[in-house]
Structure formats: structure tokens, C-alpha cells
Length: 66
Image (cartoon, rainbow, N blue to C red; front, side, top):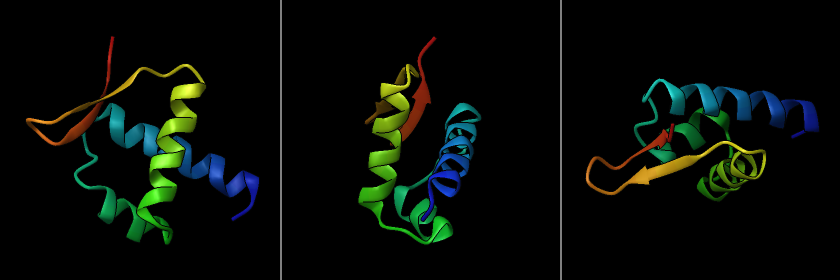
């Protein structure tokens, strides 16, 4: 995966999180053709970029904190 491809996938991942459409990491990993660990690294990278991404254990979803 090139740098540009990764950034595009991170933007799409951020879109899914922002619109509360990230149902499971496994599904996104299959859609992106990568591993679940790569998706977790992308989320970590987005957090390092300044996005306040949280995880709700009750609903099992990621969301952006205001």
C-alpha cells in the first residue's frame, strides 16, 4: 500500500467513524484488503493527527468526541 492509498483509506475510515458507520474492524479490513491490526494502526495514526477518536464498549463502535 502506497502512502497515498493509505491516506485515502484513513480519510474513508474517518468518514465511517464520523458518521457512526464503523460496525466492525473485520469488515473494514476486508473492504480495505488489509489486516485488522492495520486498521488499528490507521486509527492510532488519526489520533496522532489530532482527532479525538473514542471507543464505546457498550455499543462496540468508534466515535469522534466533541
